[in-house]
Image (cartoon, rainbow, N blue to C red; front, side, top):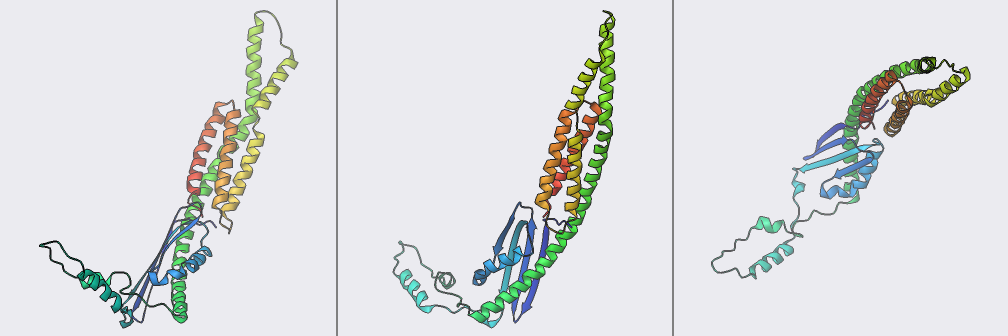
Length: 294
């Protein structure tokens, strides 16, 4: 069953004063592209998160945003007093212009590089962080994949409806194509007879047969109809395939359009041309919707 590339998932968790919140969004993209935003202490896990995402998602532009809020006493970051004293000493050495009063803001100094630094995480803390993040990621992915699957069902229904409509038009073309040759033969014979009647000449049947045969060969669309029917069948099968089918559907839609254009260029009949135009309109709809399929 096909899936959409648009989806949303989220997961939250609170434990020991630490709140975790994860948002996962996906949009259309020809390939899989993940933009992963982790808090600084956990950025070392970006590669692992990317690998986990790729086990569940095949195409789409993913935005991964993890927020962590630590309200426990352990959230306080040790201050590097030596670095702070060094900054203060450098500020005191600055001579301000006359009339300018210097105000030292400790909060600003504390934000300077090296003053407040989170301690390095040990192996057990890293393992615990990955276990939490992996659990949140899988829960958010469950929601995202479920939403993509629901939208995929709507896409499948729409795509199959377009295919049925294309088949109806193709059936009319297949029934009309042989009639076009017969009508051409009758019109050609009448036209030639009218021209020759005034000079009392007759047209040899062999000449008429050759001309009609040439016309039939030029406007023969049986091969194109057969290939287009085959592409439609493959398209329908791909819609029900358990594997990601977006790229295959895109290719088949292009092939369906190519065969339709060939039928239109070879046709010499107004009714067939009208159905070709209708098919091309339906194929445009197919191509547009296929861009949403994973």
